[in-house]
Amino acid sequence: MAIGKLYIGRKVRELREANRATQGQFAERIGISTSYLNQIENNQRPVSAAVLLALAEKFQIDIAELSSGEGDRLLSALSEALTDPLFETYAPNLQELKLITQNAPGLAHALIKCHQAYRRNSEQLASIDDTIGRGASFVETTPYEEVRDFFHFVDNYIHDIDTLAERLAGELGLGEGDNHAVLTRYLEQRHGVRVVRGAAGDESIRRYDPRSRILTLNPYAPAATRDFQLALQIAQLHAREEIDRVAGSAGFRTEEAYEICRIGLQNYFAGALILPYQAVLKTARELRHDIELVAARFGASLEQVCHRLSTLQRPGQKGVPIFFARIDRAGNITKRHSAAKLQFARFGAACPLWNVHQAFEAPGRIIRQLAETPDGVRYLCLATQITKGGGGYRAAHPRYALALGCEISYADAFVYADDMDLGNRAAFDPIGISCRICERTKCASRAVPPLKRKLIVDHDMRGSLPYRLSES
Figure 1 (cartoon, rainbow, N blue to C red):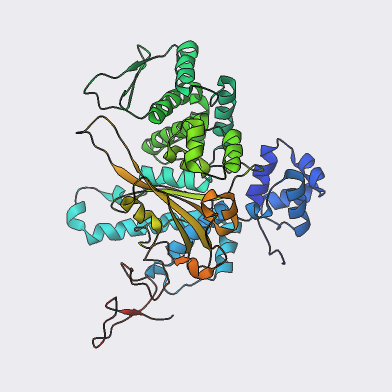
Figure 2 (figure 1 turned 30 degrees about the horizontal axis):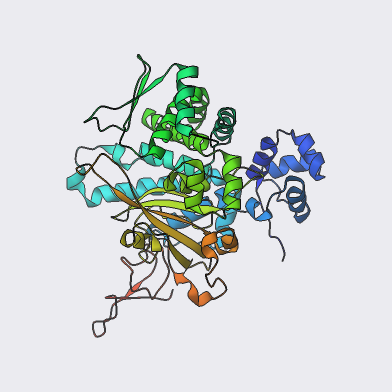
């Protein structure tokens, strides 16, 4: 099969930097000139098939990795923005969109931000009674959304923080015994922090007093949660300088976004400390991504494991491209990341045909689904319900559904696919991303019409919906 033109300068540069090579050293290793490599890294020339093969051979990477990742996420976000009726006179084809995201990603990001501001302005005008007094800031990207997009477009993988956590995990021998004792001892001996049990009635999961250097943990929280909070405290003390550097280099518009990002990076370090990269990658492969066994192996929760598996995107050492999301009972996606082609909608709820909604009906079970999106890509989808909190009968116990999955070409790496009919296309359920951008014309579960389809209303006939969609 012919390989189309690929402009993947950023990925090539990240691969070179991960191997600590100069442009001259890297170019020599893959057999090209330094000037050609410089043009590739600046997206002035596409990579040839010969260069792709050299990269795969010299650095043991999958060629498919080089043509996916950030480009897919940016392409998905841009495509969704352009489905808005605002752009009804402009309908770029897929090739045009790829050219924009590959050659001018900055322009694509700017257009997406403009569209976000336009949507918020429209929502403000549509509900003016609810927004009086909030001012013009309502139309701007919120700090939370700004941080969410930061993690989304860096593939939810922060190399310097990840490797810093992995080195410390190796020094401490985490995963080889009682993690709680190891983390507690490290905090006390290295940082002078004493860990104590919280008092009755204190509902906080974690509370740190920097003056007394006392860390108080909720004794009723699950063991995996307490260990994670210990690791988060270590992040604040051991990795503060690196975390501040990464957050500062992101260029956030507000102090709020910067501080929210610091929290996200602290959580990232904590997850990478409890679940160190190389060990998790090896274990996931050996156990064929049996998430319950992986969780037991590292003393982690199912949510921690699912989230970590979706971040295994280290250049040259990538895991299976996985999508991960956490959904509440109202259908809100409260966590999301995808290293696969499946990209979650930035607006609106998740497709009602997705098996993640069924998880609430079968607590304690892992629900499996073979699914196909409108673009023809097929997936193995897994879902399970979790319950958060602790503290007894009267305490709040919010429930969430976790969604995890991969493209069907990677399904053999999952134990859950062993008895499924992967070769039978009829076994795949048709799902979408969200109703507002889904192009399926015959879906009885549709909540709202797609934005760029005309409605046909027939007063003499009624089907599952009170309208039909035009075919163009």
